[in-house]
Amino acid sequence: MSARWVWRAAAGVAVVLAACNSTQTAPEATDAPPTSSAPTSSAPVSTTTSPPTSTSTTTSTTSTTVAPTTTAAPPPTAVVLDESYSDIPIGACDTITEGAIGYRNETARVAERYERIGTSFEGRPIWAEHWGTFDGPQVLVLGQVHGDECAPAWFVQAIRMQPPTTFGIWLVPTINPDGLAAHTRRTAQDIDPNRDGFRVETPEARAVMAATELYEPVLTIHVHSPYQWIGSHNGGIATRVARAMSDAVGWGGIYNAGTVDNGDLAFLWEGQAVVLPGHPSVLIEFPAVADGESPAPPDPSQKDVTSVDDVARLAVTMRDAFYAEMGEPTSPT
Image (cartoon, rainbow, N blue to C red):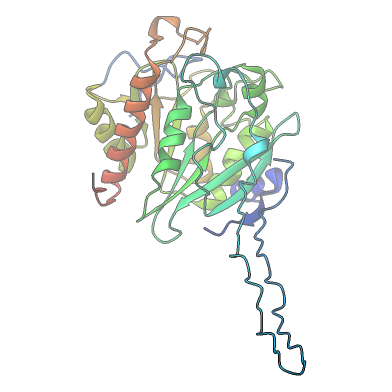
């Protein structure tokens, strides 16, 4: 059995619904840059209110006829639900600071499709949302990996608010819903999901590998905090997108996303490169929006804290730079 088929058998990916609408090593046990180099819920429902039967009544008398009367039908109504909404936990990230947002979709927009790509250790569904077109290249975006990282929510929201039109994005708001609920970096198994790229001991890592095999993305974007830099893995489109993002926000040179130099531990992007050899990835490290976000990162010296407004601005700017590098037409202002 090939490695690619192992991922699918392990994770059991299910299509749930369609809505209508370089060899540089990162420091061990951290996503830090190297020192060098620049719900269970109801399925979507579409309902149409049927008009009542029109009636025509004529009353015969010696000299009086009652004109026909018609009962007007109310306009049709349609209800489209986000199947994933109530499955995404509300946690500390929703209230960690004034103006905070969580990972639920509060944009009043509905993705083209929702697919359950896995189930967490504690039984929470792990969802992927498809935004944009199914034609052309597809990109996988992992919005949150560590459950105590809140700033990535603004990048998730930026994509939902303005999806691409010339390519597609499979957006996973959080691969670690148990950690999100508990505000912990690790999964409920007490495993760092971003060191499980080779062992795939966690259902969360297996979900990422299953999605990688199923969607065959041309690029994956891994979104983290609380540092402030951007890196790439396996060059090509990853380096171009990372550089475009970093230049757009004024962060200067990009880093090598790195590898884990510790036995058979591996970052998720390393595991993806086993599923799809040579698969390119971008690593975004947003600054935190509060001291309580990622309170104990692997390298505390790199932690940066900024405002909600700043992170929101960074997320939109990075999204636009990413889209431009993918050939997306500039939206009118």
